[in-house]
Amino acid sequence: RRPGHERIAVAPKPVRIAYDDGTVTHRNIIDVSISGASIDMRDRPAIGSEIMVGQLAAKVVRHHERGIGVEFAYVQQIDRIREDFG
Image (tube, rainbow, N blue to C red; front, top):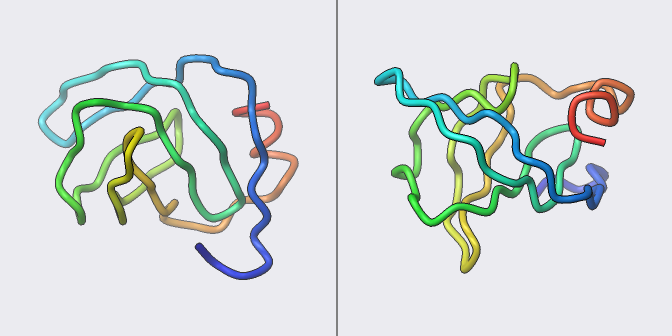
C-alpha cells in the first residue's frame, strides 16, 4: 500500500472483473484507493496477472485471506474512484 493513498471503504456491490483470456466475473470491492483496490474473491489470479477492474486496468500485487489486492495501471483522481466504486 502506498503512503498517502487512503483506503475508502465501499458498500458491497459487484464490480466487473475481466481476465486476459476473456473470462468475465463480478466480485465485491472491499476497499479502494486512488492507486488500487482490495477485491473479495475465492479465485485468486497469480500475482502479476493483469486484469480489468470495472474500466480500470490493474495488476494483481497480493493475495490475502478474503481475496486479492490490485494496483491500478495509473493513479486515479479521487472523484473518479468515488464515481466508479462509491
